Length: 458
Image (cartoon, rainbow, N blue to C red; front, side, top):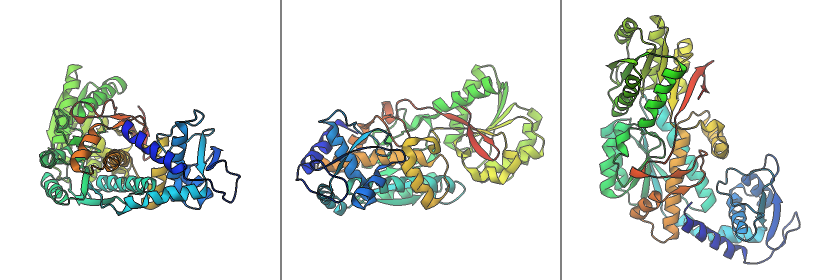
């Protein structure tokens, strides 16, 4: 949250809360409202329903509490409305004050604002794009509830293909109401659309493209709130060498820039530690890896590493390695965080390791609201959705600041996204962009398939 926006927000709420004193049914209110101490199992929407009969009025309590925090130190400023703590003091405005505040927001709903989402919604990587897109939509829904805006999401299916990505980008740019784009997925698609968005001065923020060159040097309009392959390669190498005791590895790529780039980083780290490395390539259209597995068996490496993006391929390679009696370790990257290939491969998937660029949102307290809603609407989810929600939150915050500054333009959204400074977020991490619009900090996490589920091991 920028300092300018925070001050504007607090000024608005102070003015709103000063509109009068009213009496409402229920508890005895102090002037304009009442103090409330958070109890176990409380959340803002629950308190809004109890106080006003409207779960969507939760933002009134949030904003009022933050306004109170500027004049009374016993109130803590709530950076993330999804995370309130037992014992924390809130300010709950009375019904009349809340109604006035809600009315002041109604004009925002009339503004035509859209964000684009681009990702693989069909094809072999559809699991990834669908989860990302739905999490982005949930983030927009929460934003609209909080602010009174009526931001809409426009979908674009890239099929994780660079040429399709360009078509989607051009379509988004032709719609003047689209202020920013969340996506795409797949570094090869990010590379293809990067100059298209730059030429039109539109923000595009990826939840999953990790190739180093995307932010080194990067462009003014491309943003990455997740770490890059320069961290993933060494993380994976260190785990293979120090935790698994590996001295040899067989690296397989699918000829995409993401897959080859990550294997380049991993190979360099392994060779620097005196491990032996062999490499091979497949295509994203291949469905049979028996000849590749024969070559792998002849080499007998300690680890087979495949940063593939097509879920069916990950399961096929696992099954065929098992069929030929491979006794080493199967190791995947981001694309492996999809339970469908585990279900397909069955016992052959057990023990597989994979690395991922973000925390699992199942275990992030700040994500509780969005994950609960997601699960009730769409069902089960993996780890790809969290970064998409974070990406949406970042551009929505920039859009809101531009609206408040009466400068709702794509150029302003670029400037405000660059200036993002979040001390906390839906993923439980701070967000500040450094050189090349790469997030400062960030880390990769190692998971293992145990009893058909992903278990965090590092």
